[in-house]
Length: 178
Image (tube, rainbow, N blue to C red; front, side):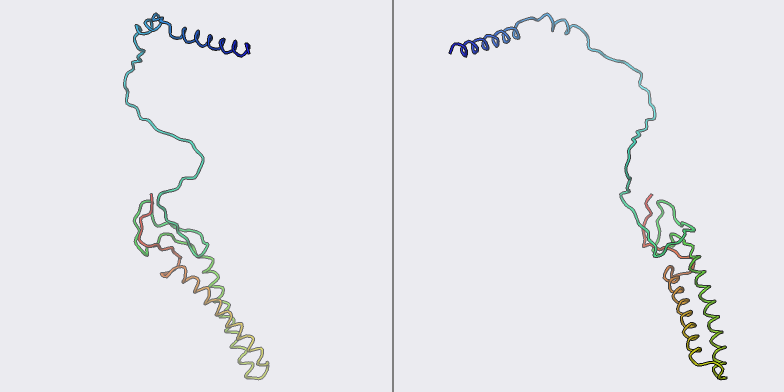
């Protein structure tokens, strides 16, 4: 029982000594620092151009944007607007080459012309009775297939632009963001 009482009185004694030394009146140290003037740095004011530069990795995205899409994949031959321009509805924004489809159309038309000529020749031979009617029917289907291919390519080209070739993308009225 003496041991816990002794430890408790030792703890109180140490606490009293710490409190008494912390509350002592030693005014000499604060008076020495109070007499010194505050540190002040003086410099000449100069106006200079300042540029804030931040280096960061990431993706910048505009507040407003317009996404243009085309139904076909072609080479852009000309862009008909600048950043910040106002564009009217129906204005041609981008010209696409369309060369590949135009070449396909010319080939399909040539195939149709050749198939038509061949059909006419075979029709004469059928009238003479030198070839069977089935050969003429086969040539008729070849001619019709060539015509359908040319018509499909014409429709694809017309779908790309309601005006004329080369193909263009047309927006509604908008301002192109800068």
